[in-house]
Image 1 (tube, rainbow, N blue to C red):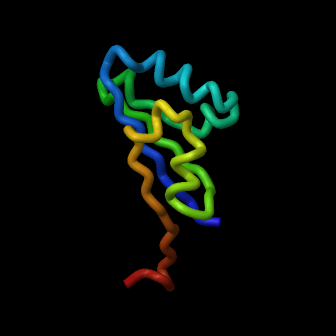
Image 2 (spheres, rainbow, N blue to C red):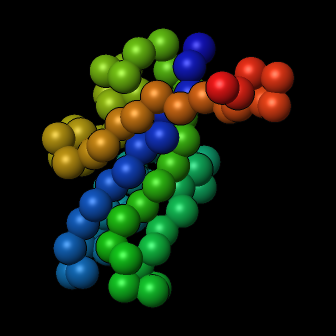
Length: 82
């Protein structure tokens, strides 16, 4: 499995509805996301594990899938850096 960073951008008035939409997937899934709304950055960031980018996107509620940026991420180590 690979790790994917999901970034959800939304407008100021969409904070609560965005939280509620993620909550549809359960409190654990919502807990995987951090929010910047309180400092005026209306985005949420979370990480998920999935086989592909498409699978990671499908973990989101349908209404958020098109707005999400899904990026495969990896860890770097001193021995593995170039």
